[in-house]
Amino acid sequence: MSGGLIAFFILAILTLGGAFFMLNFTKVVHMAISMALTFLSIAGLFVLLEAEFIAFVQVMIYTGAITIIALFGIMLTRHDTDDEEKKRPGHKFFVFILAAVLFGFLFMGINGMVSPSEAQLAEQNTSMIGQQLFTNYVIPFELASILLLVAMMGAIIIAKREADK
Image (cartoon, rainbow, N blue to C red; front, side, top):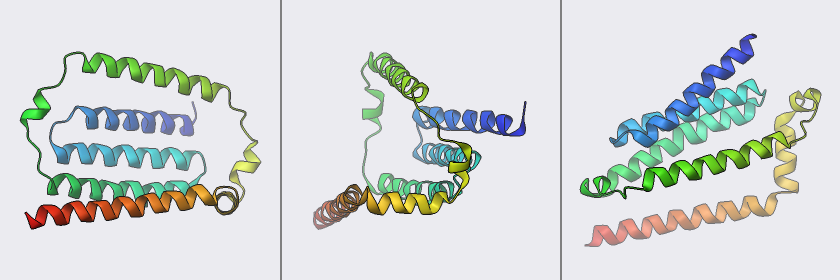
């Protein structure tokens, strides 16, 4: 067993454990910490894949910004604790079946992938990401930025309406 394999198993357990705890905790702060643990573990998996830029972006954007934004959003909104207890009885079974189907699709997709040679992965991955993003995927990139702008404007409008009441 190599060190990389041991690190992969540790990071995989941390990723799955963080996701599991995020779904099963009831306090919002505990859920956010579990989500941050999951994001950090995913960044570690990117480091194992020698995708340092993606790992850095994962830590900066998801672990930092998204976790903080989620905490602010949840803390600033009003929600009743009674609604959380009135879940449907078959909800967990349905979610388990849906997760198993998703796992099956992902497993088949990953097994069907053709992996590039290791030399291609390690060489200039940041510049290759930039070239692909701004040549082949510029339209989806711009559409995602417009979507985020519209979501931010909607959040401001909703917050302003609640403040006026």
